[in-house]
Length: 270
Length: 262
Image (cartoon, rainbow over all chains, first blue to last red):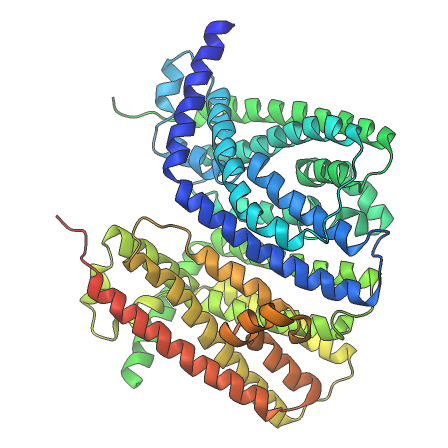
């Protein structure tokens, strides 16, 4: 058990080093996300000019929702893990893992955790610029249970996001290029994950259906807990149950795709 | 001029043949673009479920604006995107040499090599959105309004093209930087917002310094309120200025290009 942990600790440290190399790229990306926040501020500010409350929430609450979502994604979001996995399959780099006692999923997951640690710390820099500017608008609830349940929901969200990226990476066993699938899925995720607008603004029936899909749990759910868009603690516990269910399902799917994919895989050369 | 038209037609013919060979790719990418267009339209329809106006624009006026913005972007995707995207990669890898040896203007040859039929197919969808919104608003634009609208879409395309070339040209200076096209996508988000929503510093930056707002607002206003010479002039001026800047920066960058062959 301990030996296994040591193995993946090394993968984690390796991921930390290789991601620190790209710190400037991540920092630029972080600063550009402020432009996205500006669009959100202008669009929603104009929408709120006509009505003080949208879906029962104030402008400040909605802006806080988008800011927390943005920051959270730098801590738990899958960025380009799907492409990295795809490249490793295509270039035959996975061959080395077939001969060693290393679980490829855990290896990639350790690197993913390291990468998010780097991007998570780097997003704090643009945040130092944004928070003083938006300070008057931001409003976070102070209930302790929100943090106590929101943080595990974030952790599960990280596993869901990574698992979905891993599934897309696995598609490389069947398709030469996965880019189209990934960008298609990003469109679905941006809507059903609540990245374009808070999901609670959807018509009640559609919102109810969305609550059973994994996208709801990959971004909207943890942010809604932390920003007070989910009021009832009972609903949070219920949501955590469904989220855990999706984690188990996706982990199972990852394993199936890996096993099936390997049957099609051909390793050539030494 | 005829010479360039012939070159472009040859590239277009090649692109059509290529699309016919990879039909699955065509359908996949057409669906990808359609989905992303739907994301933007859905955002508008959800917001208008809860409010009646965004900066004085009604739901269908806003749909007309977003449709116009998507139309310009689809044309960019259809006519230039793949070529300019590859240009960045080729500059970094040294494969750009190929374009230096071709019989024509380097920027023209490098940025018009591929035509993406999926982008062009979706421009029909964007046109459909604009037509639907105009119908819902009960608009009856005159022939001159339509000519002005078309001219402004071309100007908007020139501005988007220039912004993309400028972003990608950074590769001449910063060869290690990747994902520069992301800058273009971030900026294009602003073009789906009405001019009236911008105030203070944001107005200065995104309306006056960067023409991202004018690109979509000027043509949309033409359909809504008829030709407004102030907006037409602003757009033509911005298009000329940005195209000149893009050509200048590209040529300066080209002087720094040192190939990568050993």
